[in-house]
Image 1 (spheres, helix red, strand yellow):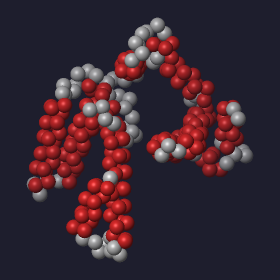
Image 2 (cartoon, rainbow, N blue to C red):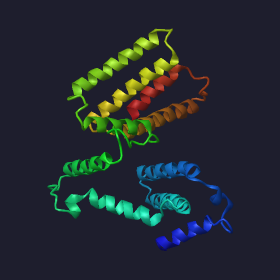
Image 3 (cartoon, rainbow, N blue to C red):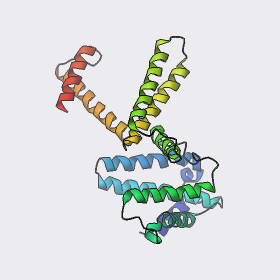
Image 4 (cartoon, rainbow, N blue to C red):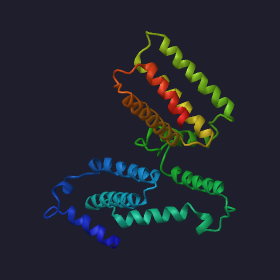
Length: 259
């Protein structure tokens, strides 16, 4: 099967006369959630090392690219070939150490600096702020890292881990203060919690830890330990609703040792 075959299938699906009624009704806005979902399903397949699923999910994501490109072509905005042309030009432009005469000394860190430098040059012609172009739709933790990285490149960054930790402790103390004061609004408490999370993201970034991945690992660990509690309560013929916090905490500690 060729790329042309997939493009022709999508054109047929979107044909107003004999296409699929559901596909014909779709817009950029209605398809966007599916695009995001497919990207996460790729991540799930990778995390599970399920490469048959990865193959299928990559195909589903490719279909999303074709879908958006077809709708754009119908509106005479651009077509799939323009998408391919644009990404090819971008890859060549952002890899002068491969396609040009720049020397990256075979160092991944140097390559990242070259990549970011090229991106910064491209943004100069498109945006007013160094923070422009960081997509609002990104997961909050991921977006926080990108915003912080942008600011750090122009020197707006704590110079060491100790100052980052002190800022984290300062934000935690502000949360404590807001919780103690019963007159404080929920919005204000939410704001302070947000500042605390942002500082956590900053600490992770300074340690070269992806906070999104760290949070996924924490979620997985919680799932495993809580399921240990459920299974052991079931063996003891105690329902979750009837179990005391002390019983669950005892099992939680056992789950930690087991892990």
